[in-house]
Image (cartoon, rainbow, N blue to C red; front, top):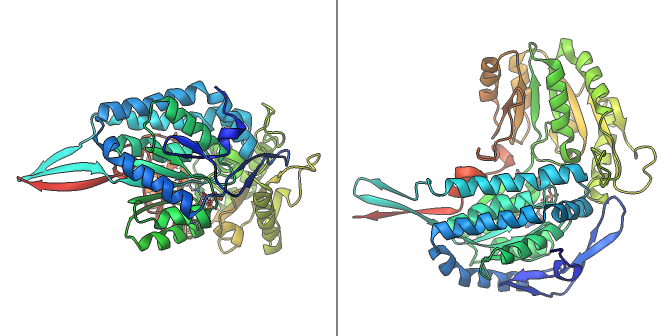
Length: 474
Ligand code: NAD
């Protein structure tokens, strides 16, 4: 089944498509064409959806776990059946290249939903402590607010565990890339999810997002996005003392030690920086290298970067598509210009558009060398294909530089031995670290230290976020 533009551009509330006032254009960043419009929901639509979710909660929470898990797996099957359509929707709404959209944008939610469904049976739902029976119960109505960079994954990382936990959900997807959420709404209905359990209200952050975060009948807000928006969500949610889980930005460091396999460190390092056009919260945007190896590493990175073809995201050979929007292109270009002005050396790329790409939100994949820790490009999240190569004097200084931003989401270490890599990984103040290219694990807890956030998603830890704990004394 293919979603129609008509259904895509409505709210999904209480199991029905509902029209609403306002129109937010959805622009294909490669073609600059408006491909759809979604309504600009606000407090009124949020209230209707939250009330529906509240009504649906009692029954859904009482639905046997085995049936909740079966529904999540049926949703997963629905995603699988429509994977090509979903990937095309993601490519159209935010420019992720077709190949990446199929393999990662759709592949990741398949893996994470299977992961949480698989652990539900063995999860310790009850526990005895002395004369107490400790039971885990769904937190209630969840308000989910998600970004545009992984339009399905970010949603499923919240919806799948929330459904397994027994929660009902009101989702406010990104207004930049809202269409995939509507396809998911159709899939949930086809999977037999009762009306009101999963609702989608379109709109902007300050209108629909804040209305959701402050709503008194919402028990928890699960937010993924930028630090400023997350801070605001926490502020408005404080009025009703609800649980707030924040998955925010990052400025992750890839520490290459003097005995590392440089070829592997540079290849994987650049790949993890340019992933999804650099629009990935965990992107390893700072490449920390021993002073003596700096020039050699820069040369290797520049050579490697030539493989990152920029262009039409529907072309199978494209590795970097446009930025998600023209606004994002401007932001990335601004930082590249700032890096030049700050005195960082341009080793590859630079300001302006790539040759031959006069239209669309394209930027030039850029490598800066000789970047100092106090430079803005070494401190702020750029969210584009921009790598900063930073020299360090010794291992202690490498760790100090890695930890010297307000962020703490992810990072990497490349070392001659796993033991040495592990020691450095333990000193990094971040929620996850990959040693010598350790693979992404969809069951491992995912989240940030410091201003990268307050919660953990995925696997058992992700499920626990959506649960309350009750002690019953017997
Ligand atoms: P954003 O903060 O602009 O928007 C994210 C969501 O928040 C959108 O739905 C938006 O409408 C909403 N929003 C904005 N202002 C709001 C407000 N005042 N109240 C309530 N909601 C509001 O972020 P973005 O540009 O869509 O995404 C990029 C950011 O997301 C980057 O900082 C990136 O690092 C972060 N991110 C983090 C993770 C993670 O898991 N830690 C994952 C992906 C993206």
